[in-house]
Image (cartoon, rainbow, N blue to C red; front, side, top):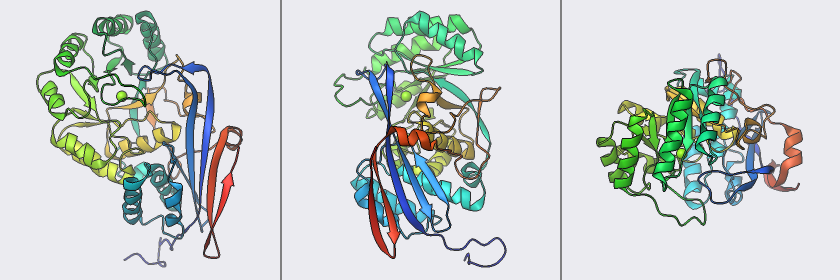
Length: 399
Ligand SMILES: [Mg+2]
């Protein structure tokens, strides 16, 4: 049993305050995400802060936390270090409400800052860096795809992911061909068909297994590293059949809601590359366990990170902790998705190093440094709950 005294002992820690800031960055010019029928004119992000009675502030983000407030008082007065207990409570909130996992990220930030260690070290410390792939997002012409690929290579990346139209195979293959012609063998290429799920209001159906096979066959000729989300996410048997008959790796699982969803995909052998996101599906602690099961079966673990800069850091820590990869998603597209936009709540955007690697921040916790001026400028709402003499005091945060 760990006591509150003795060498290196850590005394009891209690959460005394929880703050959620809802932010919104106007996007002018808009961002035309390939998987979204509506151009994006604003980018919402949420920052959660957990304050302890030892004065430590843990920070997390990566999803909206809209609707979590009625449950949030349950964290006040509890021990942020008791992560299994915290995760079980967050799982109960997850079942009845929104995805609460940015809060768990903030708890890990507290644990890291309390123990003086990066979260990646606490969760396994397998490596301190992963090769980043430039995850592009905008629909664009074949020539523009080629130009972006050259730009990405010249910036030092070793891999690029392309978004193409799954419903227009000849154009899609022409775009990938243009990229291969532009960069030769300099970059690994991933292709995302985004067929697993839909944005709100998008009623387009997924392509079927026969069409996905034609895609995989054509892309095998272009030596791509993986084919992502070629089928609707419910078709685990179809994905497994596609895998079995293709020399191209099949990737998916980015928007699973629970660890149980991701485990079903693993049991069905649906993917070569599993992409559950720790701030969207089950959190960092359960995500680490899931990653271990994926890696033990010889499959790849390369989590989705396309949320915001805070979600990217949380996934980087877990992926580095277990030795995921070999590539980690780095959302970046000169056509509308800059690192400044992606990381707008942060003091400075996360960037790759000279080798094209994403390096785990060495500072204790997750290494999130907020830009308070930007937060004040972009806040559209929020709330703060504080424990004062045993009572919960609520404060509304306004723009
Ligand atoms: Mg994807």
